[in-house]
Length: 114
Image (cartoon, rainbow, N blue to C red; front, side, top):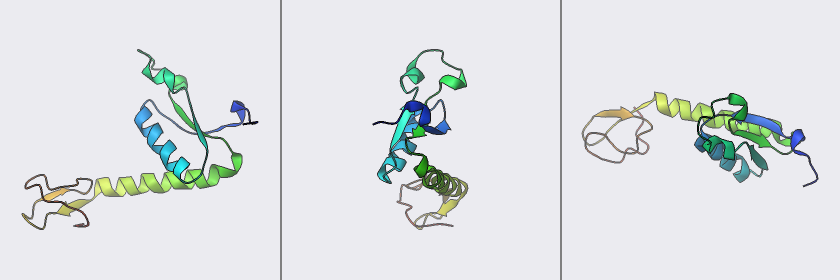
């Protein structure tokens, strides 16, 4: 832990701590050490200044390219899923691709891209 916090590279700053935590888990699972700056300020009432929003940072400069690529791939995949649709094999109703089950009949929609 000989590195100073000023050497951290910020990858994502956002009011939504849930999204910051998600990407922290993604990077940590890939072996990329991270730190969330301003994590506790996000729960402070009335904080609406972007400089104080939670920020996901990586600790090692050498991990920057891999971290950015991992996050970019995840964001692209999430966008494709959100834009897609799935047709239910049971009732033929169309649901958004990010649904786990048919909104009409409840049948699981895994792997049924339209």
